[in-house]
Length: 193
Image (cartoon, rainbow, N blue to C red):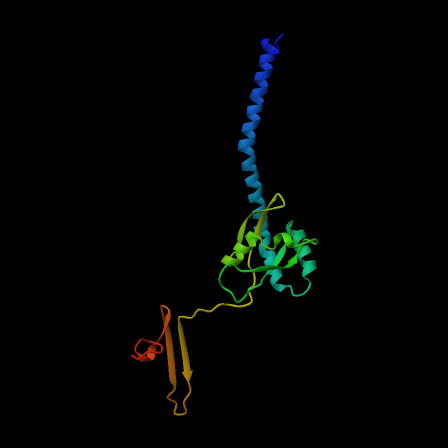
């Protein structure tokens, strides 16, 4: 005897099919949006914690191990402090090395962190997700101190003292890639006007 010949069996099979379809649709629609909302919430939480941590990083001089643990507890996140391994270089990619980490085991998993690398290359705050060990993490990275400034002047002016009080003033202006001596009628430096 075929079990699907009775009305009750057919209704039960139809009910199972409708419930399976409904659960499949819910999983396809709700789960991705819920996942994205969870990621966005975590990124917002990290971004709101970042200014306080950044301010304290700039004031911390010695006790990094205890401070990163404190910051990690307050932000409910792992805190990693990087240093720029090539501070004289201005061309990306900047080479980062781990200076302090709230993970007491190892920092090997974050040595080439793509979010921190992008933030360092762009010199601005950057956020995103990364995959480590089969798990996805939300991250926010911000370059804080770089140890100096890169000056790119458009004009230089030098003053040379003379005893007769008729001092020499040398002014140079950048014109494209060449420096122009403004005393000699805009001729490039090293050429006669």
